Length: 247
Image (cartoon, rainbow, N blue to C red):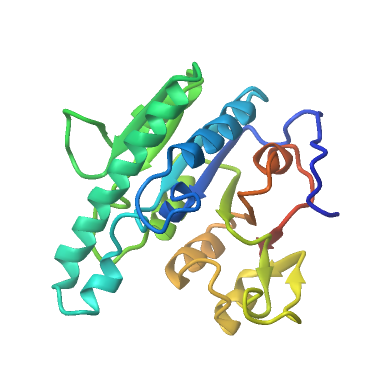
């Protein structure tokens, strides 16, 4: 099925999901930082998804502001660089919270690094309570530990809150057997196993995140964030993007 502008208006097929957004999703057409129009569009999509009655939690990256791995490769101590990247995710979380709450949806930012003046500390039971009350929850600062990516944080938080699925929103419409930006013959998978991703190094998420999902039977759907209405489509069970699951 193609990613058309026609959105399934039926009921959602999930009760609780975790959505992973890259920091780059907030850049829009810019090359750095936060684009308010991009955030506005994402906020609209999330509000529409919440109207379906789905409990939505979100993990956001910080690559639009700071990439710890890239800076570490140039000589900075890795742990310090990773902590700086975690702080960038908090900036993104606060920006997204502001945009969402302006549309009337209650939102809470829970940070793995304690900074009570701007975010609540991450406590699993508190996160569950917010979700049960219909609030959108944004998990910031990754896992709170260096050497772990926000992809791994997404898989971890998804399992901690009992999410039925991990939704990985990207700039492409699924998982390919090559780089679709460079190879016009690259083929998109409709379904693919965790093992295939690890064996072929397909780069959907880092290997720790994929292994964590595999070990706990957490399905993943990889889809294009920038196709309007796709968040609602995936929540309604439309077969968009690529589904990652066991053999």
